[in-house]
Amino acid sequence: MTRIVVLTGAGISAESGLGTFRDEGGLWTKYDLNEVATPEGFARNPVLVQEFYNARRANCRGAAPNAAHEALARLEAAAGVRLTLVTQNVDDLHERAGARDVIHMHGALNRALCGACGHRWDAPEVMSVDDPCPACATAATRPDVVWFGEMPYEMELIYDRLLMADLFVAIGTSGIVYPAAGFVSEARAAGTPTLELNLEPSDTYGLFDEGRYGPASEIVPLWVGEVLTRLRG
Ligand code: APR
Image 1 (cartoon, protein in one colour):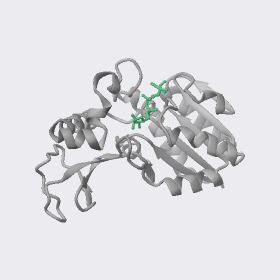
Image 2 (cartoon, helix red, strand yellow):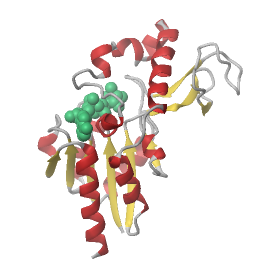
Image 3 (spheres, protein in one colour):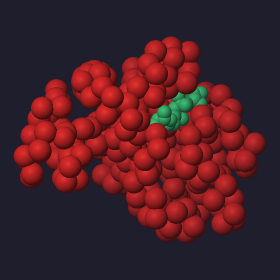
Image 4 (cartoon, helix red, strand yellow):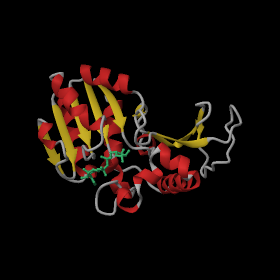
């Protein structure tokens, strides 16, 4: 069994029409992340934050998975592969491409969270701060996404999988935001081979054993094809 940990970032969804964060025209070039992606920003102006995520949710609904998402779903389904697919993305394009077990370490746009009792449920298309929590009825609804300064989800599971992996691959991420940007170092410390698949070298490109550069919809299917051919012997 070949155990592979793949980390994806906004770059894998770029060709599906969803913006990245730090490229030219990226989300953080248009919005102040302190206003729309921090607990303090939500406390200051919850209506603005809900509108920001409602717009991203609508954008995501209008997008379709691309060949990179589809290739990873094929890899996950392949005999002889134990894939741990960790995404920093809050879109559901991996799932819509057929991936069955996706770890959303930064949460998900299609989930809602009650800020009062911690209850989670499927988000409505348009979320409002006045929405009562289905469990405690408090009007404390927020998107179930991890904001700056909050703890990402499933970190213990992710580190366990990194320790046991035969290969770590980062796809479409700038390597700027931790703890995800540190996964390559965790893999190296465990003696795990590392590969970066990105449009251009990331901030941590020098830590990878190998880097391949180009659009994810081209280089990810090529890499998955190589892995599957090698597995078939
Ligand atoms: N194919 C492959 N890679 C691409 C493509 C593409 N078509 N287009 C862009 N990229 C690469 C860019 O070169 C860049 O390295 O994707 C990366 C996107 O980087 P960011 O915009 O910083 O996105 P990401 O790394 O996912 O950000 C991490 O930061 O703001 C937080 O929570 C947010 O999850 C996000 C985290």
